[in-house]
Length: 113
Image 1 (tube, rainbow, N blue to C red):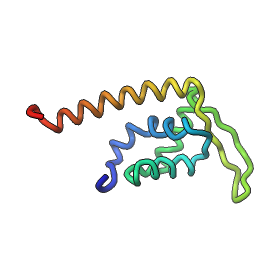
Image 2 (image 1 turned 120 degrees about the vertical axis):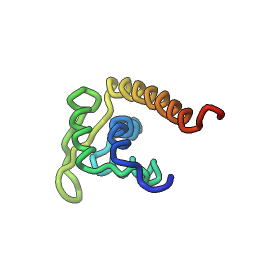
Image 3 (image 1 turned 60 degrees about the vertical axis):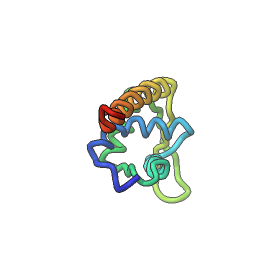
Image 4 (image 1 turned 90 degrees about the vertical axis):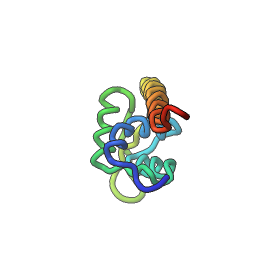
């Protein structure tokens, strides 16, 4: 993917990206950001300013469970796990994204494609 994705586009996908990487297992904030970056080939780089508010909102909505743990290196870390409710939310967001991206692809391709 060429260049970085514009911040406004990323803002609308943060929830989907977070839930997607947490579907594979428990992670703490920095690991979540790294996993998103790695899976997207560097196209999506989530900032603390967008990641942590999303994590807190998802936790408040019951989509994530979180717990503090001591670390071998550095300060304690807050680990996040997707809940059953979060898996349902992930499915909804994935379906919305599929419909949205198909619509965008069709619009960009034009009427003769």
